[in-house]
Image 1 (cartoon, helix red, strand yellow):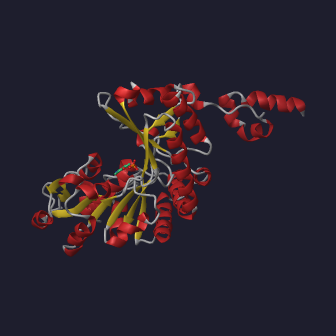
Image 2 (spheres, rainbow, N blue to C red):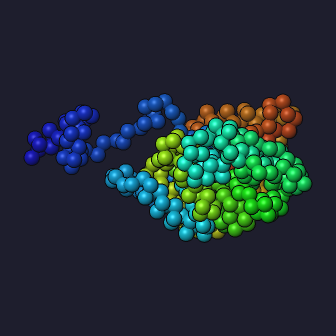
Image 3 (cartoon, helix red, strand yellow):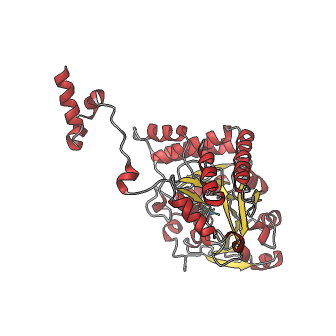
Length: 406
Ligand SMILES: *Cc1c(COP(=O)(O)O)cnc(C)c1O
């Protein structure tokens, strides 16, 4: 018996042979330290005091989401059937006609635009992005103030963006080539035509209207707010506030358009969305993320965020030269966020220097990107508290004290 165990232990330490004997080897496998992959690769993890930034890997998935992912990884199923069933469940949970899991909000923008341009026409689906001479509608109307980097995901369908500023200009821009009206939720305060009026114009002309609301949860009610308002399609990120897989997202909206979006996507090989595949693990993971998100205690969550924000403000204001503030962005990332400000001449310190010290300290901490330029007289930066894990706010407070208060 003991010889057999030794044998199995020896075998399981050989990666190739271990695979062949994996089932037996598991039984006798010593509980060794788990592999530290990031260390192997020279990657240093950090405490996320920034927020759901894509390049900082956005959010951490719930254990329930990982359970669903592991569960899915063990069986073969029909990818199409799973897409159908998970989409249907999400539409029911959120309360909208149709839902489709995409490989992120950007992919949802592409799938949604393709649905408006090609619909369910198999020939047209194949032609995107080369729309010339097909008779496909090829114009998307957008307010100038709503242009942003993510509209590349709309443009890659081969459409032309028609920029407008006023309601009158929208009315005049609409013609038989108009495939869609595009709205960037976060830009609402900056555009001349506000959200309700924009949707009303689209609805009046019976032209599909798509809202990029990628970063607009919490609150959970936003998941159904825009379809109820009259948007035909709405895009959300799955890996930001909802803590699903980072390469997952949601396209919500009218059943007919969601069906068309599906046809313009993976696994349909001759489609613009083929490269934006969602695997079975992400499908189940995203579905469970929505379930968990809708069930959470949002009041308790908010209270904890306020506690963290206050703790960090109290810590920083021990240095009397630092002005502290807690603000809640009105639309996207609608969560308590800390802002610290000081006069450079008084502290002889830049926000970039604070970022460097926080990043290079132990443990490494990332504060929100987009602090003031080094030559500005008033220096400021933000701290996002909602992606901190339990206990981490105390570590951030300690480091802030060391860097700012000493
Ligand atoms: C993050 C974001 C996206 C992209 O979301 P992914 O899920 O990463 O594809 C698109 N639009 C806006 C406004 C965003 O904030």
